[in-house]
Amino acid sequence: MQARVHVSLKPSVLDPQGKTIGHALNELGHRGIVDVRQGKYFDVQVDDSLSEADARQLLETIAHDVLANPVIEEYTVELLSEAKA
Image (cartoon, rainbow, N blue to C red; front, side):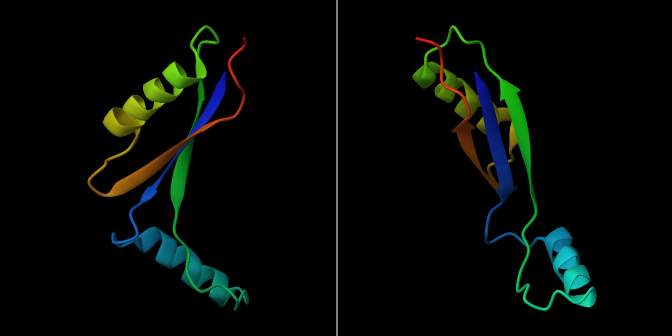
């Protein structure tokens, strides 16, 4: 089962990299850009023998404990392909 975990800074946390990217885009003539927030994602292959619920719980735990810093970041878990029945 293929999954993706998206991690980004919480809206209340300053994002200097996003600000720099936004500024660069405006300097390159892309004037319609108001704000940019950067983030990252992880593609994770999960054992197909796990149920969808178990896979989601495992990924939520991993995202919270390892992939994200829950103090300043938020995350979402997306299952890209479902478990085999």
